[in-house]
Image 1 (cartoon, protein in one colour):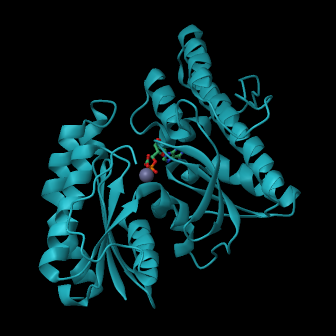
Image 2: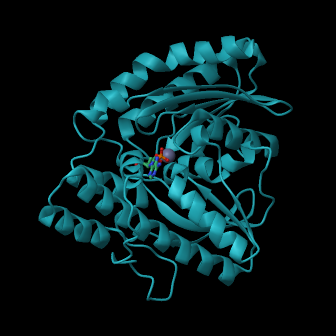
Length: 331
Ligand code: KG4
Ligand code: ZN
């Protein structure tokens, strides 16, 4: 079985082919970061146009690199949401159009289910059940994963997502877009362990998150600081420590509540080195195990969409005769 995966929810055109015996055969990615960085964030109209010009050549590349013909593909999986409506439309229309002309199904996929299951593409993958900390630019969630397709949302952000807090704080600090990698790199220059920043909602019971107050707290400190490189590095480090500490406190609580011993961390922020070190330390203290996707499967990619498409195709969880273009920006 071979599934073509198409991801166009935001600023990355991701195309991949998943083979049920061999795993990922090709994984093509075109990132629009350079296009959007001068605006300090993603410009939706530019994103749609860029997806449109890149998607077909990337599909051709994916087929060529896998040494496959279009007749070797059994189904096309595409991100139906959440995301930018115009960007999603490009992927959904191309997926549905190709599927119709190739006589195979087009399977709409939830972008966050893609992130959630991206670690399943690794050799060292978690077995079910586990708790997943999903941390991306648009979402921060704790999810109990009992099996494929059986997910209980335990908690989520009531305002900014963790990645969004990194991006907005980086902007306030005059760093580039996307902010997560920039803050993380700058924080490495800091030599102090400042734990004075708030760990939002950790004093309350429950598993929800809130990061907008921490962002405002950091903005106030930036405004009063000398703004030289070391001062900004100390702020970046203190901010990152506060975000990661908060994520770890809540993840530990979720594991205790559910009784599971495996933690999966996925989504763009799971690429953060400090988060990985902290998670490793926390999980070894409680005799648990932690799993992540490799770096290129942390941020947006077509491989995770192809994989979820395979799981759905195998179980026949799709509508064979559905020719509609499915797009749900607020899925
Ligand atoms: O999963 P993703 O590619 O897109 C969404 O579905 O939102 O996540 C992008 C987010 C951005 O907010 C970016 O700043 C953050 O992931 N990110 C990071 C790191 N790499 C990407 N945040 C912290 N540290 C990183 N190393
Ligand atoms: Zn994403």
